[in-house]
Image 1 (cartoon, rainbow, N blue to C red):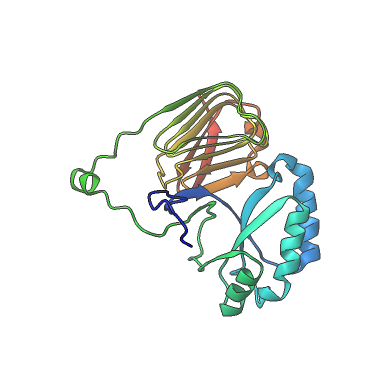
Image 2 (cartoon, rainbow, N blue to C red; image 1 turned 90 degrees about the vertical axis):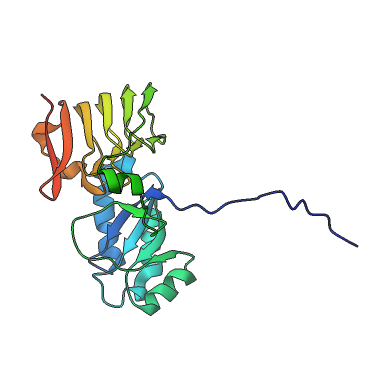
Length: 245
């Protein structure tokens, strides 16, 4: 008996890309200590803990694989979804696979980054290299409120939101993000590494801000800037947030 298979049918394709991913950098392997801190964070920013995928960075830990299963359980109890580990020795990698997680090699220490690429292949742009000109970016215009749990992105250029971004929502752009309303959710500009990108909003109340992978959470934002028009840029190796004049 022969099995007829449509050779032209394609079930899937593999593609490299840049995805937003929160890195949870562990400085303790004590699950109870992690549980207490997560509980405090949950009370401060409940919308952030809405089944958010995270990469657990264990580069600062000694023998972290001994408690990885319990740490992952603590994260899931607080609605965080561990998807991979970063760093550690061979036993850590084996533990990650045993737990059904991916594994990333360690990176050099430096400023906090929230964007991790699923492809390490560099992109070569011969035209840009020869002329020195940045490629033209397309702008996406979104009208309406970006609601909790919703994600709106502009993968090739700027994103303009004519409305508000609610808590628990996420907006992303390869270029800059402009929100003509309250920004209460998460905004990630320059997701492909564009450090010239910025974030602009009429009312700043964000859970998280990121430009080219460099980020600040709500608790890191000067309280005097909250509720006011603001702009965010990457300058002097950190995010700079100031009133929007």
